[in-house]
Length: 90
Image (tube, rainbow, N blue to C red; front, side):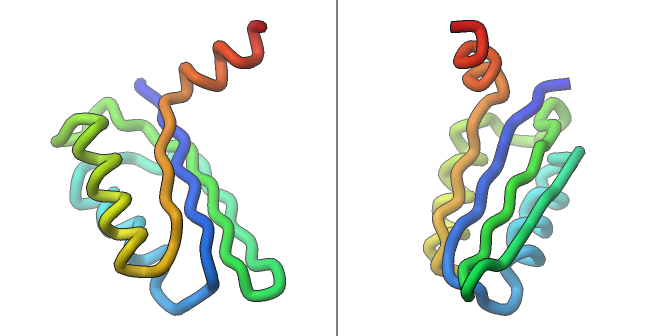
């Protein structure tokens, strides 16, 4: 298993979850855990994903999520779980 954290932040609109999750499913990226909330019209979602079975590399996923984010007016970031592990060891 190779975990990555994906965050999505932006003004709420119809289809944000559908657009992001459709991309992940099409590229064999499994969602292990998901949390989303809307605060005063702003959408915020965080997902823990398993990218081990993905049909593309991390950089391609990152670039594609940037494009999707631009299309839906959100900022989408993906980070390797290892970054968080290192931060907590310091």
